[in-house]
Length: 356
Image (cartoon, rainbow, N blue to C red):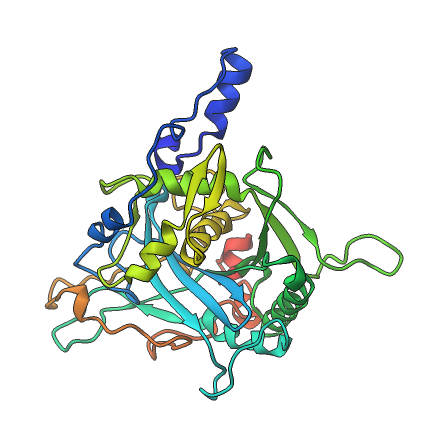
């Protein structure tokens, strides 16, 4: 079941090479590239972007930093790594609606991301009055700060500014993941233990500084590719909403495996990168790592569907997507603040209890 859900060939390769004494031949070696036309047909008519369908147990947001925008994907995860692309959008301007984003030039522009921690996403069903039956919180925000070599320093400074600004608002450090792709595709770990961004004057890490995680993007792309080929609901399946654009579908299929390496066949591949880093985000502790169950989801951040036996439900296509940063009046916008994080009588003192 673990392989069926994760589609990670790493443990199988290690077993064949070390235990069985045989060379392991990847199941992907003879696979044809995923066809964008087939992916377009896979879109599911019963739910749309900006809403959370049944099956999703937790939401995580992934962000790809570009010179003039933030590309964003909201990923829903369920049992046995079943996954839903719940939203896909880009942020081009500041709150004034006029000033264009320049995250590599102005680190203060990263503040536009802070409201995302409090965003509430409507469940993909409405009551008889046409209102969503509930809202789901976002557990974490993951930022890919890889970029090109010439933008690396600016991306690092902007990411550290974002991390410190979020911490100043009381966001729990676990909810912030700064990640970049590793260069060693044969690394045994999918997500390496992060390094601290800053050092003390006398040496050693400054432990309250931002931590950078290194993802084995080559192996994770293998996993995502295998999971995209699954057409049946269940472990490992990646679901796509009815209104996901053709442009974003093309981005998912923008790379092909050639002679053991992933190569771009199209210029734009942001949606694929967002899928990769969404998987990387939950590989780090204290999140799922290799687990297929959902017991790792902290209290207060699981997706809860209310009992609606006496309400009339309609198709998710009629649910309007919540604007970026919007919070439902019925949901507190301060989940994750330090004030809310203080343990109360009878509450667990573990990280799951403190996070709420």
